[in-house]
Length: 325
Image (spheres, rainbow, N blue to C red):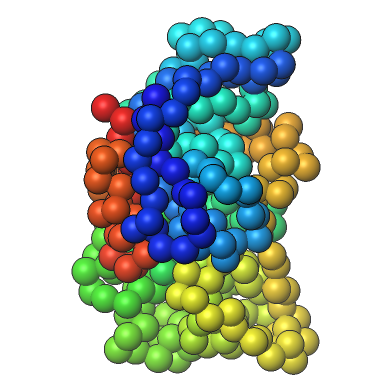
């Protein structure tokens, strides 16, 4: 099988496409013939050695796939050969085959293509967990999404609208904001040309937003927290801009607000049944027509440099996919 291999931590340009032995599932595992893989910002950080998870070298990056089950290991009861599945794994997704636990794979549902399914688990899983379990967002509440045109941003907009929230999209260009509004955002803020805090206050008639979803970090996090409403929840998703903000904690006190960490992967490992339930609910939303996962860029595995550059240079709108076809 072909696989993208990281032999030295550092630049994504140093990854190599190699032939590797075919895989075999162990007890409780399934072998997936990978059709497509989703590309996420943590994949870049893992290759650079900057992520909290540091696999031993060499390794195959990537954490989410879609494909067809071709073998099952001893004791597997959740899946059968021929099933179309979405799978998550710590590493190993950027390859033509992968092995994962039967408990970290689930059916694709009726509506998604392999490309849509490949970009579904991490972004939609993270966003739904953030909004449902961590923020407990309610119909009629207002959500501010930073980095709104990125993969998790678009997923959050779609899910939040399906849950009955009003969504304010914030991004760095009008083109990105157009894309976010096409995905369902109600209101928009260009934080390259507008003051984020003041614009939020204007759009909410001085109340502020009930929930902030922040996968960006950097300079805009504090402005967003200053725009939060009483009893608001600030969701810490990640730091795509690079710098980790030093948030003045007195803001939480003054606003009766919460800073809430969102580490979906660790939660899913600790609460697999709840994670399965979340995915079942998301698949039902999609199959019932509430939204459809957006895929904007699909690259063949051989063109992995262009796919990864789209993420590292923050050019991506929506989800970036590597196709094994």
